[in-house]
Amino acid sequence: MSGNSALIRNLDAIYYAELFMVCAVSSILGIRLFLHLTGYPQIGSSTLHIAHMLWGGLLMLVAIIMLLSFIGKRIELWAAIIGGVGFGMFIDEVGKFVTSDNDYFFEPSVSIMYAVFVLILLSVHTIKTGWSFTKREYLLNAVKGLEEVALKNLDAEEKKDVLRYLSKSDPDDPLTTALRKLVSDTEPIPVEEPGYYSRVKTSFRSFYTRVAGSKYFKLGITVFFIGKLLVTLAYVTVFTVFMGIGGEKLLNFRIFEYAERRLQDLSFIDKAQIFSSLLSGVFVLLGVYLIRKSRLSAYRMFERSVLVSILLTYVFIFYKEQFAALTGLAFNILILIGLRVMIRREERDL
Image (cartoon, rainbow, N blue to C red; front, side):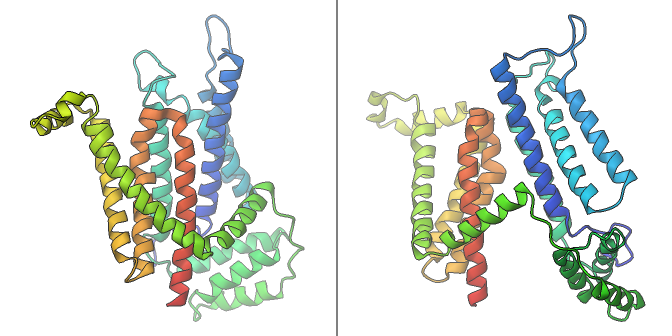
């Protein structure tokens, strides 16, 4: 990409996108729980119905106006929170607007929501990591730090980040030298106590790093993925292919004819789930094969297996199981975090 591109990426994008997603998902779960507990009340009259999608649109509008009207990281933070809550309220009613009868309980709606979230995260991740940051992008992200200097809100961590960006900027640019001197001479304010979200995230990361670093965890990961492969094969061969075939047919030599017929009768969702499960299983098999030769290569294969499950398989699982699939998704995310901790450790040991 040209260094003169007008599209300058924000190095804090992943953090804000993550916060946006957490608020959006929390909003959806909170709304669904509230509606379930209160018997799905209608806000309005016998003629009017004020859908919560409208409130979501209002909150997203507030977030946009905040970003257009004010400056500073605090505004970006609150815009991500308010916009995330609003987007959750908005997307929660997707079932009403993809069906002719405005069916809020449209079965694929949860899967649609999940797919949208996956696409958002993939888009933000691609924007940030799709190509190397240029020296100009580092410089302009450092310039953003001057907002905090002017607002007298620059803390020690933010100062460290700005100086790091400047160290990766063009050293021959006069602006780089001037900014480095200005920021270095700025006295940072005392670091504020982290918010609840940051404290929970830091505590969880610290705890999980300790656990994931133990030899028992590494052994457990390997055993887990071997078991995952066996379960995947069992699911595909037994619960999908042979489901509905009677015991007397299992003993018949024409069993493969029945299995083939069963496969032809499967829905697109079933076939897609089988394919993605098998793809995930292929990466597990490669990881098990590589574990003795290179733990790093094996862990990367296991990581790809989990990513296939999270980004692809769970789109179809949410279609069939609705919000009940959240437990399995959370478990897979924990495994992914553990794998990435182990991958970083193996990379440092090379």
